[in-house]
Amino acid sequence: MGVILSLLIGYGLDLLLGDPDNWPHPVRVFGTAIARGETILNTGANRFGKGLLLASILVPAVFLFFWATNRLLEHIHPWLAIAANGIWVWYGLANRSLIDEGRNVGRALEERGLEAGRKQLSRIVGRDTSRLTPHQIRTAVLETMSENLSDGVVAPLFYLAFAGVPGMMAYKMINTLDSMIGYRSERYEQFGKAAARLDDLANLLPARLTAFLMVLVTGSRRAIRFVFRYGRAHKSPNAGYPEAALAGILDCRFGGPNVYHGVAVSKPYIGINDRELTQEDLSTAISVNHRVCFVCILLIISIWLPGLF
Image (cartoon, rainbow, N blue to C red; front, side, top):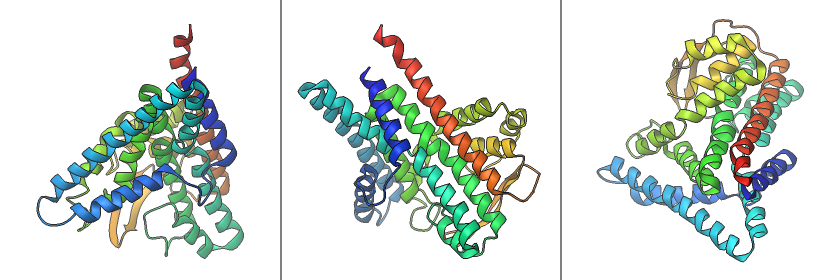
């Protein structure tokens, strides 16, 4: 019952508030710890081993911290633990913020023009946005929303279901490590490789589950075909599955050449219909995100509910 109540509290807070700017957030603490560790360790020889050491320290430390905190709060009073865990679930779930960021890009592009759309998009993607067309901006938004539906919604809930808040927060540390140091650049090629591989492993099942849920909530047969045809047609072992599902739902094409951190990257195409994307497509993606998140909540409740009886 505690898990279910905490889940509902966190889900409700996410729907109501999202991630308000400048509020305290555990991911910012994670980022500070990663940055300090990287400054100390990312020098000299054996950088792969040092990056592995950093991940091997931070991920278990996060799990143990939240496990110990939860045990302490349960000892003080069970409802205190439920309330605290509800807040942690809220922090770990990024459904509302992901939708808001995507919607904000669409609004900026429609209401304030191309440069505003490019600037707003730069908040949520790693690619160079300075020369993107309106079509490329909408493509980037939809790719990001589908990929982060897995990283920011389904995967945290997946680990919450099987390992509670400690599992959810350990996953958030893995994801933060990858987002900060998991790049193929001169600085991070070796140091961040362990973090990137760990993130790939952690998202192996959630990414495929995300694609399945996207198909389930839309009933799109084309999405099923796209998942099997294009799911592996991506440089990431995981991102292609939710991207393929959304491309199938919308009957559009993702992928192609882009610039990331000054390096030209050509992603394989997902889909063949290179049609002009619209605000309606963004609205469809937002609806898919909401429905997938809601179904995840129901699935977790169904897993934990038998334990009440």
